[in-house]
Length: 337
Image 1 (cartoon, rainbow, N blue to C red):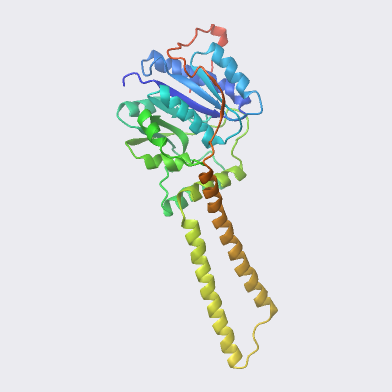
Image 2 (image 1 turned 45 degrees about the vertical axis):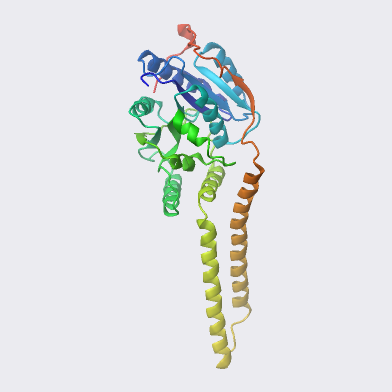
C-alpha cells in the first residue's frame, strides 16, 4: 500500500498532434512519483489506440521502445471512447493496484494525481476528479452541461457533477466493474453504482494542448441521450404522460365542439382540424422514437457482441521493466504540470 503499482490509462483517437507532449508530461510525473516513493517501479502508462487513422499508434510503438513506463493497446477498430477506456481499465487491473484514467489532451490537471494516490492510501476505492468551475467553457456549453446534470439528478441518475472520466479506481473497484456487462457502457453512471468508499479531488481544467476536440455538439448530444436511456425509463413515462394529457385535451375539445353543435353554432373549420392532426401525429412519432431507442438498446444487449477487439498489445505482460535511461537531449524541458 505504501508503494502501489499505478497504471495511467489514456484512451487515444487521432491524437498524433498532442501525444508527444502528453507522453513527456506523464513521464515526468511518473518519474517524480517513483523518485518520491509514492508509486512502485512497476507502474506504467497505458495508451489505448481506439482505431486511430493518423500516426497515433506508430508514436505509441516508438515511445514504448525508449520509455519503460509506456505500454500500448491497439483496438482493431474504433469502438468509441467509453469502450476504449473500458478496454484499458480491464487490461490494467490484472497488473495494477489502482488505475487512473485521463484523456490524451491533458485538459485535466495531472498535478492532482498525487492527491488521487493520497486518497487511495487513506482507503478510498474510487477517487473522482471534479472541475471547480466551468469558466473556460462557452456560455452554451456551460448552460447545457449544468442542465444535463440537473436533469439527470431529477430523474434519479446518480452522477458526479462536473466529473468526466478523470478518476482513480482500485483493483477491487475494477473487479466489481467487471460485473456490469452493458454493451454500451456509460461509465460516469455505472461507477457511482459500485459504491465503496469514494472521495472528490477538485481542480481547474486547462485548455487543450493541441488538435481538435473529439466531442463536437453532435457527439455530446448522442452521449447525453445514451446516458439518459441507459439508466432511466423516465423518458418513456414522460411520453406516456404527454399522451394521456393529449387524450384529455382531445376529449375536452370534443365536448366543446358538441356543445357548440347542440346550441346551433358552426364548428371551427379546417385549420383547427389540421392543427389537431399534426399535434397528435407529432406526439405519436415522438413516442415511437423514444420507444425505438429503448428497443434498439435491448437489441444490442441481447446479441452480447464483444464491446471491443484487441489487435495488438505492447509490453503488457512484462513485469518490472524499469524506465530506460534517456540522454538529456531526448527529454525536452516542459512544464511538468
